Length: 436
Image (cartoon, rainbow, N blue to C red):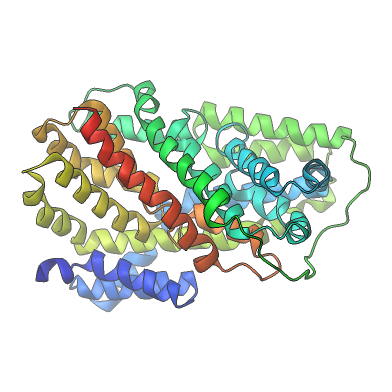
């Protein structure tokens, strides 16, 4: 028990969550937790910082993607497409607050699988709608849960866009560790996890956060909006660029390249004048720069955690307890997956770590292939919703806190943690019982 309590992973993740709950900035909380975790893992202070800084490169592609997608999202404002979409949404919903949540959730789903701008659409589309939400007295925690569902559930269920990458990683790592599956087999099992999240989503909007909540009508910085709601040539060019971004991303498996091609189309066909290029990139950095830097710091945190050997130690400690019962084994796998993902903030990066350690255990205990897929996917996805360093939580906060009335930890992280991680754990354990 002492070795569990003193494990660097346990110490650093608990400290990270505690600091964030005390409203310490996420960047500072990650750095402090990395240092403390590294020292707990018997690594010298200078070595910890060296590992941390070198490890930041692990999320360099993700950070670059967010910056370029931020510029792409900013282009939607400069062409007038985002204000048009916001006004059309406002005109459609009228006084139907639940319809607004479903529309925003649907757009979030499309941002993962059809037009892969990921979270970059949120700080563009959401701020103009805050006044509408205030009039409806809509609890923004419900919107945060809706956006988180749209950002997370699709890549678990749908084999397209980010889902294709996530499910491909699961299939690849299962094959490497002795389980013969095809990429197309993954969604046939993981849709159950999506169903569990959908139940959590409905619980959040229709039960937990159904009651009205009052907000002040504060000014939100917006670009000049046009009254004309008709789509122009520039709007169609921007939409075409978005489609091309998807095609290139799927073809090359490179989101930064897809975003770069999309921007090239927008400037090449003069939907936006070349003279505004610098301004557009600067706005992209402003929109997504903080999120991108948090992801870089999270990669540094992950590198320090790996260097401590705490992950192996943690798994070795709980492995003997796994060998007696499938349900106990699944529960312990999910517990460790939750801790790892809460710290590093990415389910994609957690898959290779967990697969090497857990797949042999699943094989030895006689887990069926569907239950092995579900447990691994759930263990990797757990914590992504609720982690202070996850884009699933950073994205919704970036839009909903535009007027300073939405707290990242208490209004995004805690609600999404409760409504999605609990259903994921229960469904994963239930799958072990169902798929014998």
